[in-house]
Image (cartoon, rainbow, N blue to C red; front, side, top):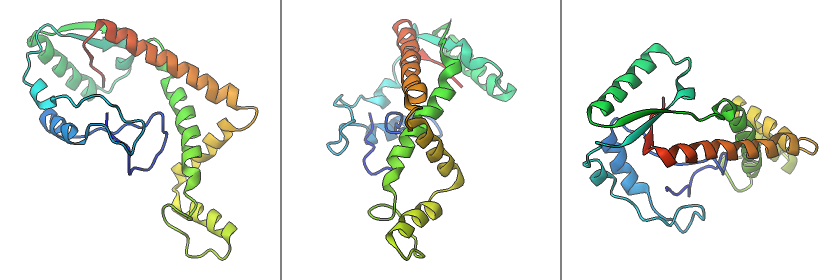
Amino acid sequence: RVSRYGLVAFASSLDHIGPFARNVEDAATLLKVIAGRDARDATSAFAPVDDYLGAMKQDVKGLRIGLPKEYFKGLANDTGSQIEKGVKLLRKQGCEIVEVSLPHTDYAIACYYIIATAEASSNLARYDGVRYTMRSPNAKTMADMYRMTRDEGFGDECKRRIMLGTYVLSAGYYDAYYLNAQRVRTLIAQDFKNAFHQMDALVTP
């Protein structure tokens, strides 16, 4: 929906750009500006840009809204109460609220960490001080430049993710981890497709 051109790739198959805003109107306005096909990003969609602001004026009466039961286990009280207020408002405006199930939710975080770290390891290999980002001023040789640039340029969490991603992509572990995570992701995506066959929207934390 939105071009990723000009941004640092983390996990290519998971990266999506979207606005944060204080209210829905601001988010819709911003999305209208940044959405659309970009020739510089081969993964950006050819779909025409919708009138997001205009869509806000439509009546929501009769919409079927799904509440995924797996998403509401163990929520903090303040989060749960805010969502409950929103759901009550939707019901008051004529929406039909239906509980739905996304049965593979429990595997989502493990699946994310495998795919995201593997792709981050691959994507961030290019940040070596030659063409991208900073270059260590302390390097005396090319090998030093690669090593020191990556050591000084990446934070601890980034390094952990790169190391984990390199591990799951290594010979002997690729099938056991990365390939299985891809299969699980397909099941998670299918859960959403099934839900959206019955629902117009989902409410999540």
